[in-house]
Image 1: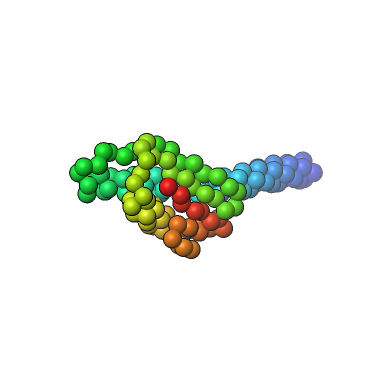
Image 2: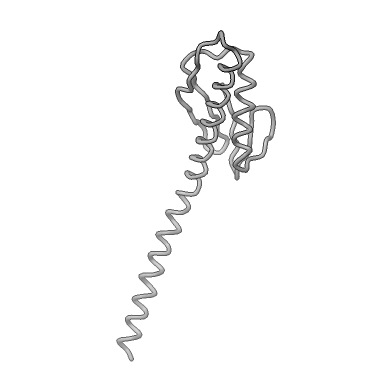
Length: 126
């Protein structure tokens, strides 16, 4: 009976150790997954906006989203970098499409270029 008790105690210790490791990793992985979803939505929204701009204005050269920069800890700024300068009159359209794309995954709009997802706030800058 003593040997079974020792095996049970070892089993409980091993399972609890594995559970602690899983919980620690989950606390790091959760916010990173949320940010990856946001960046994917931003890329989709900005790329769609750039495509619509070029199709609606035949005299305009194609514009490509070159990169997305994310800065900040809790209040994050997402900067959209295009391969060519975007005309000022099209920047609000790109921001609106990008915000709409983030809202589609469950964010809530705070103002013109700011959206809140979870406990983080994201500001879109072109």
